[in-house]
Length: 203
View (tube, rainbow, N blue to C red):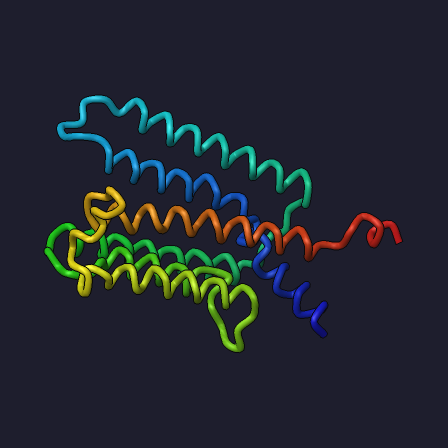
């Protein structure tokens, strides 16, 4: 029963479990946020930022090829693809609104942080009950980001200065990048361990 559930889970979330693809994205988010935290206005040279983006893109393409060459390709059904893109559109729209609110209004909470927490909760494989290892990890990450998003309400907006970070927006972005990398590595480990071994295939 557990093996059947695991096989079904992997087939439904095959591409999302290619966790190493999240590593360049998370690293890029962290590095760009760190760069923005250290750079001084006015910004005159964007060459370093462009190099970061190109490096992350090449890294992502190399990882994508690794997964295709090593594990093959699973083509999702139309309904699965449609549900995925609807979710991505909704989360993207939520992120844009959250960015606008954080930039426009001086509020003691981070809406972009709440948006990141929502991504951890609702992006595939989304949190579902009863909790499995995936749901537990994503729930813990979402709770961490949720409380950090509310932290200015209790600790003040300047508490990020303890870490040398100039503002909640940059702090949340760095944290999101780090957690994205951690989740990606965990997903990859589970994905590789869940696949049949070479000996099992030969049998």
